[in-house]
Image (tube, rainbow, N blue to C red; front, side):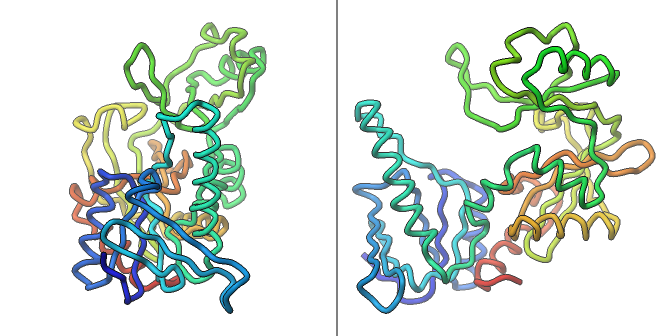
Length: 321
């Protein structure tokens, strides 16, 4: 086992993560030490220890993997990419829920207690930024054009709203894993009509929105001071449905839009985020949503944008740019 003496970057992510691999490769080229771990490995492949109230520092601790031991007081930055939390399927339902909570609040709480590392992004900040109604309100406050949107569990209001929009769509308020008849499915943005609304809408709030008459989508990745904007051409309402049908070009964002996106992240105390915008026939930009930890690796391949290098620079620097 190697004890990491230099100030390392912690990378928390799942086992197979091409995006994290790209950033780690860039950090390796800079000779920055990296320790990668996944919370789901807790037990034989991951150990955490922390001490409070017994040392001059408020918190002292270690994270240990089969190949590395990290002094948490020396961590320069944390890339909280796509970590998986353990589910303990071998335990009873009650025991597995109990154990999973202890990991989240033990391992997670230890990392959150640290005052030194620079986070990309801090998971508590990302979680707070992931509420679509709050996103829409902040976007409008910052001057973005926001589609008319209704969040409701009232079927009468839903039908009236959809009837008044001409073209309306339904979007999930939060992506969650979902399996139907043994097949994984996901929640796309889909057209919706008034006759599709029944009393089952009362079970939970739904998000309904006016369909933007767009000519293209724009995915914008911000990493620190850097802005990478990509125009995505397709005939699809939701371009994620078929990546083979997409065409990509670099999008020169207007300065006002660029500044507003950076201000958006600053308001949320985030250093990176993936924004989805739509462009209409008049060239106006419409706000769609923010993913605080969105995918971007394929866009680097398609455009040549140095996205992974920007992340590596930010993490190696270890403080806010």
